[in-house]
Image (cartoon, rainbow, N blue to C red):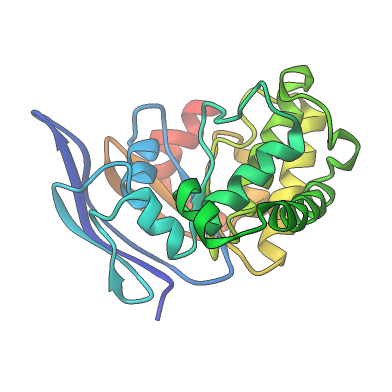
Amino acid sequence: MALLEVKDLSIHFGGVKAVQNVSFNIDAGIVYAVIGPNGAGKTTLFNLLTGVYKPTTGEIRLDGEPIHGKSPNELAERGVARTFQNLQICMNMSAIENVMVGAHLRLDRNLFKAALRWPSLRTRDRDLREEAAELMRFVGLEGYTNARADAMSYGVLKRLEIARALAMKPRMIFLDEPAAGLNPKETIEVDQLVRKVADSGITVVLVEHDMKMVMNLSDRILVLDYGKKLAEGTGEEVRKNPDVIAAYLGAHG
């Protein structure tokens, strides 16, 4: 059985059908990319899958259990994490503190309850700091542990946000445009990091405009156009699909 099953998923904003009857499955342990021209519905689909939006119609199942309509917090408890196009970083905190935020969100949604439950938060924070430091090493940011986020470059912040999402210990991570705005060197670093995340056993779902990165990383690719599923398959299958060439790849050279 697939880890994530999506069947006839749609969402309407007034008269606008942003996603229309989209169906696909994602197996555990793969890199699954969603591509398409601007306005194709990629981020809207991500928002549906991660609980930001509730679908108008259709089903989303995780391990066979219906999850459509559940909140992002409820999905986080089930092992779903995500990053955003617009960085969700606390700029007045250090890098390691940002990663610790992800760990705190995993362990408790309510800090007051946590204070009652743990007589010694200091011990727990020490453990979380060690865990966060290990994650920073994993994403290649061990040299930035105590740096303030507002002093870090955009490319470094992109990897920091992935570290914070990983601190929630997800089974499945959704990465929304992880290479957007990066220079070629930074893009290669993120490309390698995404592969490293997938190799650790976490299922990766990716929205990305960088076609070289998508083709290099992805086991399966879903192509959207005007909110509809245009094609799905391996990189080679998608690359050769005449509908995809006409609607997307050809338009981008």
